[in-house]
Amino acid sequence: MIERDHTPNVGTGLSGAHFSRRNRQEPTDDRTGSGRWIALDESGYDGDQLHRGGRYMVLGSVAIDDTEAAAIVDLLREEARIQKSAPEVKFQKMFSERADRRRLLGELLSPGGPLHDRASVYVIDKPYFVAAILVNLLLEERFNSLGHDIVSNGVGRQFALDLATEGPRALGRDGFDRLIATAVGFFSKKNRTGGHVTVDDLCTVLQESYAYARRRKAPQAKKAAQVLDMLRKARSEAEAFARERPAQATPTGEHGLLDDTTDALVTAVPTVILHASIRYGGKLQVLADDQRLLTDDKLAVLERGATAVGVVHGLIEEQHLQRLVRGRSVDHPSLQLADLVAGAGRAVARWHDGEDDPAGNDLHLVVAPLVDRGGLLMNERPEDFARIDTDRAKRR
Image (cartoon, rainbow, N blue to C red; front, side, top):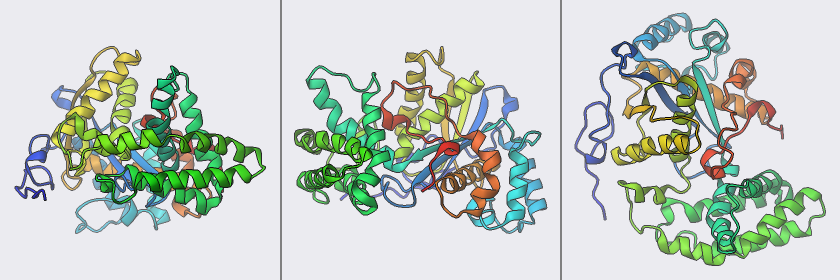
């Protein structure tokens, strides 16, 4: 059993040697001339358990430093009548149930507001993300062995879209949820030794899902059945993943990313950073909210990854990321604004999906334009850049 290091670290609530270096306690300040600051926070994040906590995960970002953010947060506290005893401003606790406060947030994001054209919302549709993982890890290698590249030509992405979009109609909601939950259980960290969800368990669900979808006559069911037919024959790829998976936690180094196969934060962070680099240019500095997943070494890997993808695809010409660090939102008002943006984005995504969410109803006109659509990285692996255009999402 691995003992956890409880040594405290300045600038973060995370303890231990893996969180000792990339911490930012002092306020961020663009006036220092060392690069523009971007603050990141998430909403709807449950680690790699992607079948819990609702359909969407959102990463909100704001191009602002603490010096400017502090004045905005102070004014928002005053106008929203948020108690001074509250250590930080949070969307879920303070805005989700208050229409008057949501109006104030909308004014911040609207044209003429202090956050207009500085905020961005990145939305991950979790079922699509899992469908893309299935395609990537089980089908890509199979096709490669036959001499076919299904990544660069977009075929793999279409497979994932067909399964995620048509799967609920082909399998029924309960059947599709069972498929997603089984896939998450197989690929998640809890299954490092393969005892939680075995290869047999995964293959059984894939086979049963295919058999059920094949019997449905709707054209949509046929698309999902075709993908499931390929997946059910990929037992050898599932066995290879189970063999190669590290048996213990690997918090450091690039090998640790294999332990985060179904963790959307690992792919969302570098993508959001890259989009910010394209949008703002220059040298960026990025402040992310505390997350135990993001060790010092993993932040370094994500930092390099955001740059490498952009340079390879010609989206940026050089390294635009100065540094990626973490901080506590209670210490950084910029992170509190990023929390508001992320929370608003998730509420709007739910509302566009047909859920009864008053916050989404109130904020959709100002938040929908913030959703990062782009289509910038169509040749990348689909699970790396899973997203949803909330203003076009179908209502259930």
